[in-house]
Length: 440
Image (cartoon, rainbow, N blue to C red; front, top):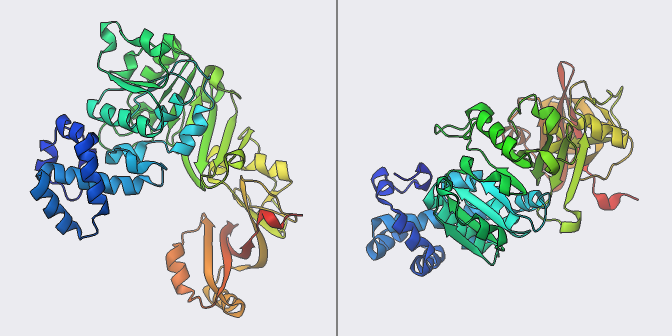
């Protein structure tokens, strides 16, 4: 039986059960490629396309082609070359996007053999292979097949598939260590010869029982297994969900890094051994997929025990720390760097009288401060001709879309509404987004 991730809304359980590894080999081959191009270019309705494909290539492969067309469209947010890649639904959801994967790979030693354990669809493996020989280990042969194709699509010149389990002495490891590019091995990652590697990366399965969990003790491999693996090779990067609570011991042994891209916190990585640049500290890293590589990254490193001072008044500017900064508990560190204060106790929003140009902070110039009252806000927006409103909130139970409709906005000007709980009441801050180009 293949994983439920290959099923789509248009694929019945019976069809999904009928799909075989041979069907996926056909999919990644030249004939599958032709049908993927034709299906993607077809603008007819879904039922019409499905009927045409079923008549042409059969029920199972028709569903497989349409599923891939849909997944490739969704994957464009994660991969620039998504139209040449292959996906499963769960695999796409769990894969590191190319910006995050590329950043993480830069922290691994160059031109030394490394491994991505449980490599999935190859997002992290592709990035690692660009910096030297990389070994991907995946126990599901179907997923391993797709990973090889995806690594090749990412521009890695050499990528091959091995099917020899480690229990038989791991033949091929010596060849792998001399190979450029990537090797994908179908095997149990927990038995990999870690001692022969310079470092390793792992993304434990967060839904081994079918339901997602942020509890590390319920991941697969579980915490005791990961700890055993770290005794074999301590130079490790462990990818976790941003909301995962690492073991207390890791807070002293590892560098815990929360990584965001385009204002969304994507993952938490626990860096160990020589991969940890600041053991015992936290790091928040901000990536921007639209920015040039030279200016697409900033990192904040510090101690989560540092708390910001609380302002006695709201300053001319309000600042919204990046989600990675908030998740890492480094709001106080960023506040200290820019001489800012929190607008209230335990509030993530900061304030000050001068703009701060930092990728870790979104800066807003305040125009009005008033209690959160729908009638008063309507009056302000009507007087200003505000028709486009960005709404930001923390700790306030308001749905932005619903609130925007209730405000009855009219006009051609734009504004930002920031809702924050100050004491027992909610304060509404009307502001405009401050651009770095405005800074003197």
